[in-house]
Image 1 (cartoon, rainbow, N blue to C red):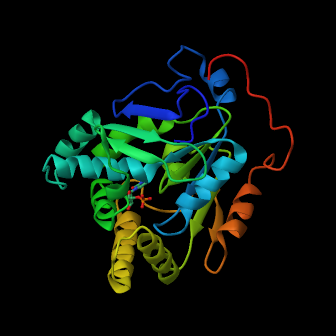
Image 2 (cartoon, helix red, strand yellow):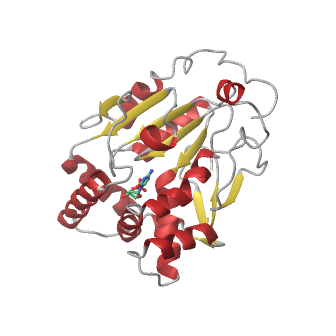
Length: 270
Ligand code: DC
């Protein structure tokens, strides 16, 4: 986890229980709570758009925290599968979400390790089966509700880069900086294929393209928090662009990303 404060060790362990956000839990009035909120850069988009890599690099460049919301859905899908819960049973999966412990471990530009109920699930979570399970459970409003407060609790100074599908529309609608990152389905499948190959996972390209297209369709057509750009998001198509180029385009959205002195963090509670 890109976690510079609070955890000390760079680790962050959270159980999926509804909780007050740090700013509201201390009885502050709403106006000062909003004024004191850490900035958020939301990066939403379909699978394989490069969101994960771009978000981590941008968070690292800014020195901000990083939330990989897809990993939370993947972790809940995996935990539900371990418990042999029927993924179409919304209540049972939401209850499973509430008792699942997820820990992100590791800072910097690389992928954090993810621990689910004490097991290192990093590798398993990146498999297409985990992505498909995540997409299936993510369609349940109860499961999304179980994850909402947890995701918002990642908002901390000096700032947060939040990567997902509904970061700019539902979770952080007041985020000052929003990007919607996409790429053609063919390019996304090619990137995912290369990524999996590098990790020693062998999958067929055609199968992957089919899987990605089906998942996009499911994510974009679900009734609750569908994959779509926020009205105030910058739309970026990364087809044919290098990661470095896209990172620069995203960084340009944050006005002080190249400034020597970012705005000072307000004193008092976060
Ligand atoms: O970003 P990802 O591929 O790791 O996400 C896995 C699935 O989780 C994706 O198909 C849809 C779901 N998801 C979601 O519904 N909302 C989010 N904010 C993040 C992911």
